[in-house]
Image 1 (tube, rainbow, N blue to C red):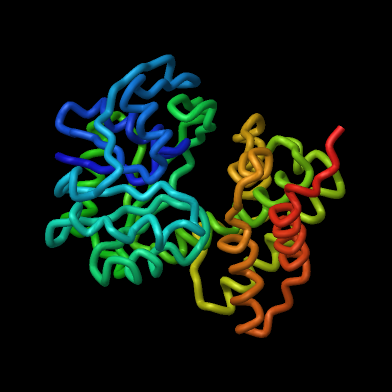
Image 2 (image 1 turned 90 degrees about the vertical axis):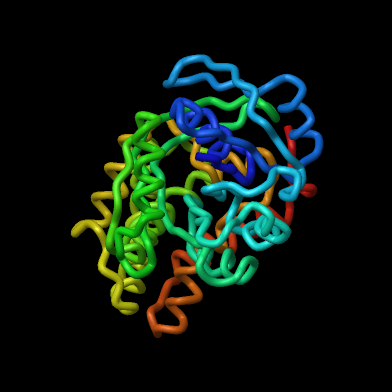
Length: 311
């Protein structure tokens, strides 16, 4: 099975390594960063962390036409980059070849279809954790389950193919017949964690331990839950606030992706996470003042990196 990972950042490189453990998989990388691609091609990819230390030499391409057709593509770019990352990748896709998104936030399925046309997007989430250490070096920060599903809830042949691929690599993966519920459930968790870590520079586990961050977390999550219910979404758990707190504890030492972006002075996914709650809340008549504040504060951080006071 030929698999292309689009976007060799933290999660992309992690899945490139993990899927390489399946002897039936041939994994390649597609990148738009020439410096990173040349470094990976020259030196290989290094992985350290909870899965041990590993060095591999995946094939990496700057051009989809040079990479050629694949049986599966996995999109691992940040939400704001989805459309641009998908443009020009048509040579990867045979009829029926799925593009699996494991990204944070909402709107990625729609952006994939806007770039490639209908029929390619396959949705999913992952609880795996990874951090970039260098252009060709990552830390595997934690294990977790990956869940995939079709928009119509069916257990299609391409879902079965993805399940088999991941299981063959020894990974925990399952199917959902409630894709919107899955994506919203992950969104609710990200709403409670990501922006708060970006603003406070705390590890995940610290957020529930402080009265102030615990209050903001509960308020932001409550707003997201009310919006999801107004839209008729069936979440995967009954007590979302408790679920977010338990995720914080389970990933206590993790540096959330939005905090990683702020520390590296990069664009964040706050508009695809808290911003989605604000926009859809406005359409549904649901007030979302806490998420609006979080979105505006993180957006201001992004816009003012050059003006930041440094000691």
